[in-house]
Length: 392
Image 1: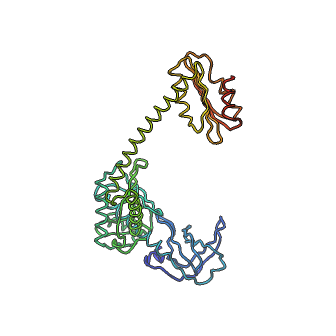
Image 2 (image 1 turned 135 degrees about the horizontal axis):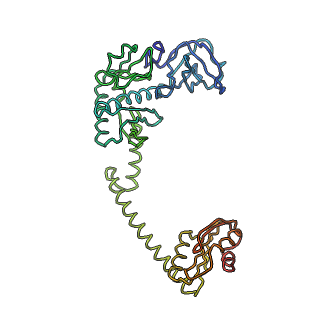
């Protein structure tokens, strides 16, 4: 392990190595094993490297038992003898920035609040750590972020050493090491001592910056999402673009966008309340007009009325006129919908109407003796459906 190129020189971008073996795995994926490699395999929360071997794409890297497999996109016959490997350096360096940033932020939470990290995930866009606490305040998050960025600004060295289990007692490790034999420690002097097999830049300054993006509760822990290095700039650029677009649409300076949006949302809520009240008044008026035209039965057809509107009209009618029955039908595009309701002095069950008319329109519905509703296909006109309801 000590002699692997990605451990000997973490900044190595290109290398030459001999092919030891080339095979296909159980899934038929072609891979090669090299005499040595700078390609980091997936492990310890850090994704694998990608790149090329003699210009053949390396799309995955895994450590299986004691060998590192380089899965390629191409034919195994294209590779033989000594090959030239080249890493996708932007991907590798991004992973190093995020992984080192995780060490720094995790250590900051431990130093300030004795809050341990129990899991770590390096995602494509964000990094997360799960911290073994019930809650984290905004003040604690700000303090941990500030401490982490102070460590970055100091540009402390990030050192790696190999030790044995017996030698571990000489170091104040952040957490217990889970491996045995040769153990690799990643050290930020006077700040963080941790067993880790991942890749990290040579100094904290290369992490550039850390920005916490948010938190959420996960199984009794707090998950902290953040970004480091180049991802901070990408996140800033995205948010700047969104803010500028919002400000432009609101016709206000960016700094006033939040206030302007709050005013618009408040006005919208007031408008929605007024519109809802107006709709309720209109439905009540509509129901009263229908009641005035009939003595015991209100039967009416509509276009493009929602089921909720039909139900409200019917409910108003039978509530105000306990000896009245309401049969309402609406056609919405290629669908028919109906509502049948009765006042408390009407003995007839509305379920009888639904049971008879639903098969006529291949429909589904339900309800109670007092009110039923349903909908189905336009196998007949809305007028024909209403007539069928009246004849039951």
